[in-house]
Length: 117
Length: 115
Image 1 (cartoon, rainbow over the protein chains, first blue to last red):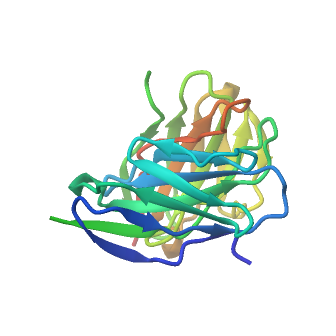
Image 2 (image 1 turned 90 degrees about the vertical axis):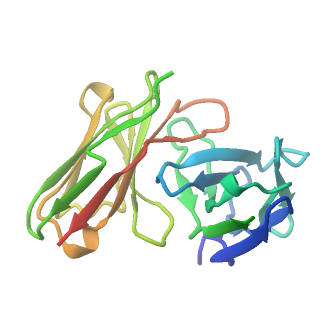
């Protein structure tokens, strides 16, 4: 079974609109972390937002928020007021065990977001 | 603060040739990772170091791939001999290795094309 599932290979969104990128995960570990990374065409992976499995509130970072629904095992990324510079690949990733020296991330297949002017 | 440095950025080789990629992590980061990202896919972990010891290399094709992290700082990933399916971007990342969120910081990657 896939540990991280991103069901949207590509999305087109009008500039200034909000967009939700879907991510579901599968783990039996009670302690885990969820990340979203952005990968522009330059190739670098840019950290956007993090949600810990024990965090009571949804994470927010500027225009990014994470809609964390633990019972459904989903961690969708919401980008408000999208901008042309948001066009990129977006990856959801999960860290399953928070142990010293074991912060391995498993990535989904990604969603290519294109913002239309 | 300097980020994760990788070189070369691009490399084109013939199949059966060898290639080596270099990574310099963020200063003070104990954990170093090499990921392989094939076009259209998410990154796949090849090997993870904690200081100069290997934590996880379960997905490293050991018959052709090797990696080392000398003195717990820089790391080199080698492929010998290369196959067509090794064409990918090789991403190096580092993390503090303790505390915080466990965020990984990535380099810009080394793009390998095998002809």
